[in-house]
Amino acid sequence: MSQSSARNEQQLLIGGKWVEASAASYDIINPATEEVVGQAPNASGADAEAAAAAAREALPEWSAMATEERSALMLKAAEAIRAKSADLLDLVIAETGATAAVGSRMQVPVAADRFARYARDPRPVLQTPLLPQVVGATPLAPGGIVGGMVNRQPVGVVACVTSYNFPMVNMAGKVAPALAAGNTVVVKPAPQDPLAIVELVRILDEVGFPPGVVNLVNASGPEPAATLVDSTDVDMVSFTGSTQIGTRIMEAAGKTMKRLLLELGGKGACVVFDDADIKGAIGCIGSTWTFHSGQICTAPTRAVVHRSIFEQVRDGLVTMSGFLKVGDPTDKATIIGPVISAAHRDRIEAYIATAAGEGGEVIVGGQRPADLDKGFYVAPTLITGTNDITVAREEIFGPVITMIPFDDDEEGIAIANDTEFGLYDYVFSGDAARAFRVAKRLRAGHVGINTAQRNHDAPFGGFKMSGVGRDGGDYGLLAYSEPQSIIWIT
Image (tube, rainbow, N blue to C red; front, side, top):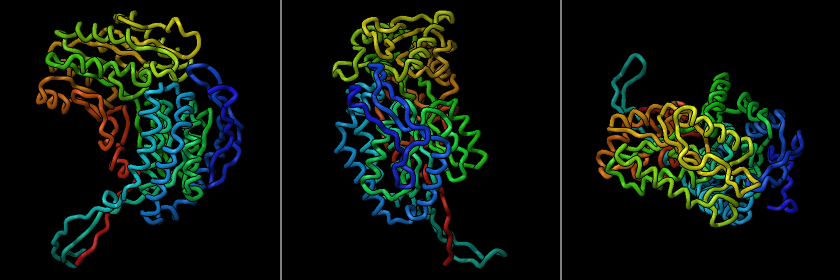
């Protein structure tokens, strides 16, 4: 996207009105070209408080609206996103640096799919019967047949705060189930690339969501998000991002007993046994490079490989790296685009620099691509070492793989579990029973057996420092609702 076509967004959506952000706007930088994509609205804490109050005011009417009416609006949103997919794709690529392949398959279309998914009737999930019980008379009440149901009510006002890597998809995955369950929302994008989410909110406004049901605040700094976490008008915070920020949110939200959905960091292990399909394992591990430059919390960044095949896997990854074009994300031949910012590129490079001093060995990569004089690029990097070195312990969020050898099943499982994170692990073995046994012993919220593919109806979330709660499919409706038991007697 050229400077001449840059977007100038200076307004927030609060209570159904597009209003000027209190702190004007700030530049959004294309990570591939280092040019300005456009300007984004820069909200204040007061703007965030106003948005929360508007969402609170809209809650009673929206939560009482007929399910069919809410579902119809969700479906209209999905259709409108698809109708604007070409423009949205250009914008997403420009502000995130996502490659054409990732953007066209995993960014815009999935956002539309999530609204369509939650256009389904939610009542079978939100209203479930209990088996009746025959109860004798007690000092409490007369006896009889006691029936009941679980009626899940909306949590209330939800602050949806997202990460920069998949802005539209991540936001749609929060907003759609929250709205379907009868909540109102305040949308707070990541500061690095909010423009596609501004457009998403505009779509929701245009298709007819009532005033105050969807509100938008955005800012270059942390004040509006902190305001939402503290606000008494906000009942729940749904956050995707770093564990460091997630722990701060959890501490602050406890003061007002907010409900939380925190999808935080990961340091996924791919445990490759001696009987594994080596080519398949290499493809999975290599997705740390090929899928959005490793800027994804589910990446198998630790390759925990049986010693008998360690060299085969290592050499296969080295060969693979040579075929991965790094460069312009709009070029269909590009596999690895830039990372989000200069600061993040410097952070990744600093991690790589620690490896040699800690006993690791940089096998491939480790430097900036020499032929790219602009853009925030990091070459695909492979490091061998132990599970004790920094690059094996901390989330790097870039195209960096650490390979670690093991000798038997118990050691492989121990290495995989030796981390503060527990979001997404993988097991590769030709013995399905063995793989299943191992998967059940991994301390991770999600385990892929011989695949990196996702099931989007599976509950998604992490163990340990990888977060709190689950979403995805019907679990998304559960995440944004409170169970209420209703009991009667006959």
